[in-house]
Image (cartoon, rainbow, N blue to C red):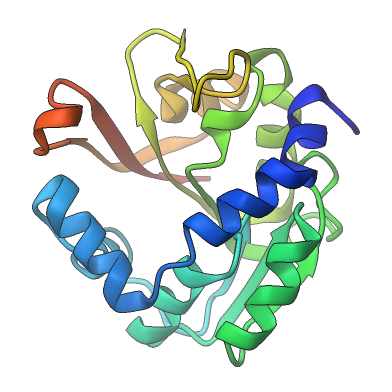
Length: 213
């Protein structure tokens, strides 16, 4: 499935995004501490700390794999990612080890039903046109046997916002509730609204959520 947004991210803009967001694990933690006052490792532990470390995890839209590397640092061993931008996939192979990352689209996840225990996104759903969300969310639900995990920009109502001067490429919404609207059997295990603490982003919030089947 091709959309205006997938074409945008597969092109030069997506490559520039990858170069701009090639954090180290330490850099990612520092980014979180600066923007939210809590490290990414601490948030991961809060939401996933009680899960067995050998569960099968898939990240949809993993970029260079730094989020997966953070989970690896927690002790998780069975980690897979798919990424639309081939440049990011190739770059990930020089930056990660022991993590399976391949080119692929969240609109057509190349795995069988219930292939993973946990499927997640991090800052990906915000770039999907609301009219197309049910497709990618449905695919995530299809390949997950137990959990959906996410971290996305939050707003009670879906709202488009400009992204680096572009219209039609970023939205904020209550994504956990949209998952539940699509599949009412999903239950909220944990949900936390996380406000930005930096002056430039004051008043904005992100949300981390863990849903269970």
